[in-house]
Length: 295
Ligand SMILES: [Zn+2]
Image (cartoon, rainbow, N blue to C red; front, top):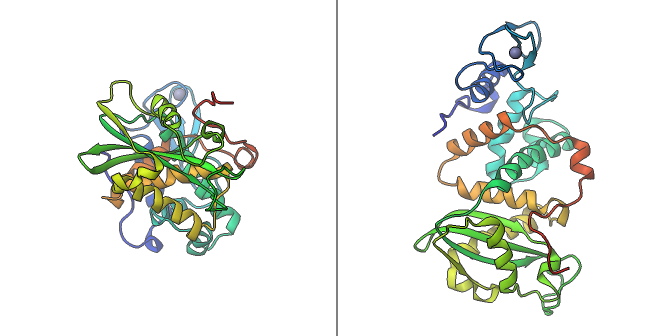
């Protein structure tokens, strides 16, 4: 279990030094380690906004934010820490901009960088044990038709179950070409999901087709909750950033029992995952983790 190193009390009282120290502890829990030569000793230059660590062996200089999600940021670290709390609120970038007193663009970028860290982690996670799978189509424009629209996005949710209780979820935006022309997801879509996102040694995979979602309410409730957040709070999502928000939603669900653990875990991720740039965020085309073999 990672120790919670977040500053205590209301965020307005956090100092930049407290946040630097929390990030330093999270990045080097066993003390400084040079990113180049792995030497364990350094000298510290404290004349800048954030301390600069100079390796005593190879003289490489590194800051506490170098190589992290906060790499190169001009935004104070205490704002980033507050944003790590905001992730659990399921609110909007407009809300974050208001809380921090920054521009919408800055808040939007911070949110996406944090989500990118969640996405990189989620890409590596495979479900294990007793797994249940169901799904649906996001973006229905015309409810009376079962024929897919170009804007439809099939989403599959897989969960590690303890009896009827959902323990851990993974939400995945599937390649629309897999779903074909029908809005009812077929077993094939679930099979592709299982192949990529469930460990080979799983115990059981129970599949619930969309129309059969009522048979496993706890699981479909997570998906419905996510879709309501997308539509009612975020005013709808396009395909490009949908997976990032699905990862955001899975993360919030998986840590819903403890906000402190949620923050510690996100801080830990942020301290070793390299930042995505604004250019990468805005130019990157949607990548599907799963292949499309139906094309
Ligand atoms: Zn070194």
